[in-house]
Image (cartoon, rainbow, N blue to C red):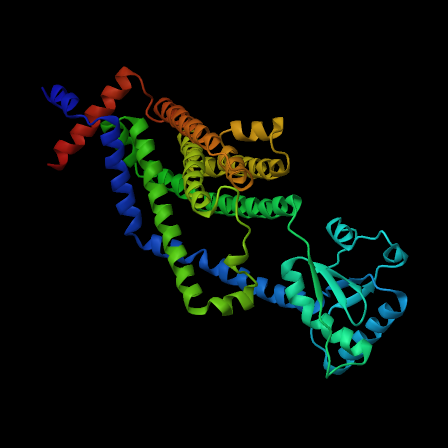
Length: 423
């Protein structure tokens, strides 16, 4: 009679997963350990920001911008002499003027082409005469160096401080290669952030399972509800906890930025407004970032749960998790390497392999506008999560629960004997 009642009262897999997820989420969220978990990443972020600020300041003080001179020899010499004199008198961030040489004296010399070919690391090129200099460069570089060039030209022509020449502008538009280079930097930054968050947070799944195996709680859960549901519930509970943690860190960062945005920029050299825009646009890119973080977390978490199912002791868990961690690092390197090789078999392999797929697809979102591949990739990653969960739960039943008909029945009877003893 009791067994018949328990069979009818058993929850469905989704209901059981929801119960486990709610239980784990509340237990972790309202524990003291979660508070210290939130504080943990703030210290390396603070130290990293401080180090980045010091490095940025050192770079500003040591890096010298070069401007190429495509003027005749006499005007070039006068410009360099005036620049040296101004530096000795007023100092400041004046550019270093470098004559291009005989090549600039060729009547067919094209300053725009020379600059776009990046044959020298010039911020801009100045041609023309002292009375009518012409500055060639991008819009940002022209705005930055137009004033210093006028000052140097006026000093070279001995017309300062009463008369400064008018500078003619020749703007070099951003080329396709430059735009792609910007998007590659966005893809690299997104992949790195995704990797760090996943590796930082996915370990909670493993520690949670190990703790419950030691306390025999997992055996009671497995006897009462399907093991697949236990695994799914734990995965989504830890994912929800991770999202809460990321939200808290994001709100703290937003608060600091709203209070001291300019100060943060001066200290760290970081300005979100200068980030290159991804191909799909920022709103869609951020949405895909959240989705791919969830999939990467679920994939790695399901793998960690499988490791926990195979291990009998905490030491075995640590031993088995190390190769997986190293494999995930290699997977990240694979996805990072394929950024510059779109459409190749190597990139397709990175997309097809479940653990590297979120990283490769997030990079593709930064480089290509098409959205259909992302839908297919997310579906494939979800299938991979279910397959890993199924394999992990099967291993757990065979190795820990000693599953079979008799073993399962024995576990259930032991569970209800404990319940009756408590009552």
